[in-house]
Image (tube, rainbow over all chains, first blue to last red; front, side):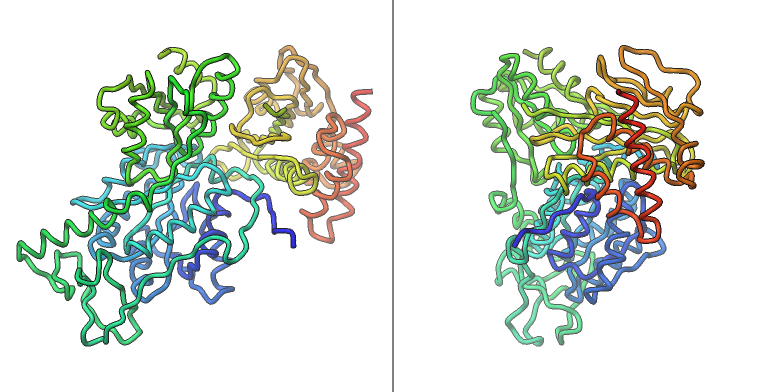
Amino acid sequence: MAKKVALLQGNQACAAGAVYAGCTFFAGYPITPSTEVAEELSNDLPKIGGKFIQMEDEIAAMAAVIGASLTGSKSITATSGPGVSLKQELIGYACIAEVPCVIINVMRGGPSTGMPTGPGQSDVMQAMWGTHGDHAAIALVPSTVQEIFTETVRAFNLAEKYRMPVQVLFDEIVGHMRERIVFPEPGELEVINRTAPTVSPAEYKPYDATKGQVPPLASFGSGYKFHVTGLNKAADGFPTTKAEYVDAEERRQVNKVMDNVADIESNEEYLTEDAEVLIWSYGSTARSARYAVNELRKQGIKVGLFRPVTLWPFPEKRTSELAKQCKAIVVAEMNLGQMVYEVERAAKGNCVVVHEGRVDGEPINPGQIAAKVKEVM
Amino acid sequence: MSQRYELRFSGAGGQGLITAGIILAEAASIIEGKRAEQSQSYGPEARGGASKSEVIISDGPIDYPKATIVDICLAMTQEAADKYANGIKEGGLLLLDADFVKNTPQGNFKVYRLPIMRMAKEDVGREIVANVVALGAVVGMTGVVSRDAAEQAVLRKVPEAFKDLNKKAFNLGYEKGKELLN
């Protein structure tokens, strides 16, 4: 049977991906340019027995997502930069309480209200360090409508597998752009569900590290009772200030991600084998970069593209390797310089690292990237 | 690398030019099986203001989703013509609404005029289908998708009660667009 195809916006593909992954709960406070994610899910979720709630504000929406997830529902919210700023306290809460959830950030410019209908990529550091305290983060940065679908599914998988919030960041361009998508059949993409406890409710401890780096999570309403708090806590979930517990728990929560980078990372490389100059770019800007690579290659310039799909954890190993091979790396991103600092750090002085940015609400075009490549040749 | 064909529909917000772009992209990608992408840019206004919708059609993968060198540009208003009738390739096409664009943008491209809003109002009977008249004209002028594919795509998009109206609008635009280049 022929697969179902459609011409969809990135935001619509995101909603479809959420449903495919088994999402049954959305809470949000619709904001441009992410609104279509909410619009689609308000239509789709009730049909599959799910819940859609438009909350009174962004903070409440994030709280509802955490609450719903603790009852066992795969939960999502969608917003843009101003909303993600408001959600930070609760994103930190989801980190320490280890509650799986997915946060979609369709990026526009900023700070504050910025330019609602224009694209931006200036929330990428916020995705890692927006909430305070030591923590690990997972952030995915798809660049096509099809990839928004698959990465939304993967975001749910990673959230459930590692018991934590996962952010998916794309910008207004891919969020609003329409392109053809081929819907995966049920079963074609892996769908991961959280691990439930095997012990009795009386024996259950929600943060029991002896059960593994990611302890099983019981659902409220299934007979298991436990304490959930933003305070540092012992295995039973109750607050503690005992140094050995606090230290071990903080480290476990970071290590559960950093020990599994190989499972979480995802990158695409294009013509990097013989590249002398590397363009390091993600999201919609990587599309301009790929176009620029093709144009430059026609002129005999040995240039390649490294495109992270997992932005956090940072693709440290491969970026370091490529820095040893290349003369220069051009980091193209729609901001005044964010990921370029991570690339510089990973390059360890082995090559020149330069930034090509733009913040006027227009995309970085291929010509702009090509000119920068020629400048560093 | 594959051939890109770039189209830009511009006018006032609320004139349905984003919809026209979506219909064309569906005709190309879903009905004809080519690669097509539609993107848009608009201001914060719900109505009014200049808006544009771009469609890229290609036989291969489309990396950069915005226009690089425009093959054909449509401008329905003076503001849109002033703001968006640029980046048109040498020898490319610019279609203007004859009544609403008085100052003709200058450049190394061919300029054509049709009273699109007036045709929709007087010949088809409803101003609201001006976007479909315009789409018909652009398809008639360029042949970038077949007449059949475009008509099918229009009809997939509109409710039953408006099918005849839109069919009439599309075909009127198509015929007039084709005549322009003869």
